[in-house]
Image (cartoon, rainbow, N blue to C red; front, top):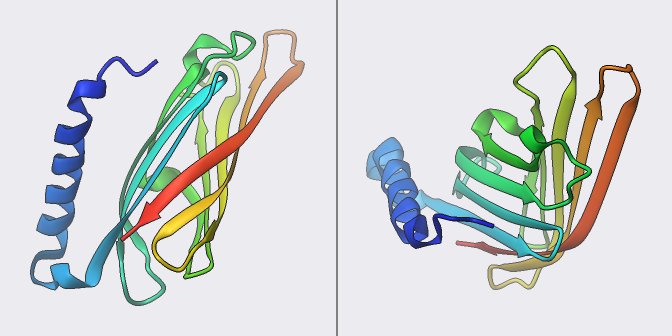
Length: 158
């Protein structure tokens, strides 16, 4: 599904470098979140830079979902998420929760992809849980269609 698997280490290095440039001298007070899920219906990859203080806000984010279900319109099957698409977020030693939302670029027909991650932490930086992906679209007839997918996800937090 991801054609650029060989570029993942380079992308991680790029994201980490960008994070350290942004925070400069306070790099010791930063960390990262990395989540992955892959099953026959979807593939999810999420990476975030967070600070360790002030509620651990996200200051950098890159994510991608790929849905293989052909009932989902082609333009919504692959969705890239950036920091502005993080609608809600929670991180502590017990839980990591993320809500991502991105609307279709083409305003002629409304549609969106929403990804929800709900996990429990083990106290050592590993968070296991579930994802829920919803793809919604309104066709030319004006009738809406919702496709919902669920599965397991694994996150690591530094």
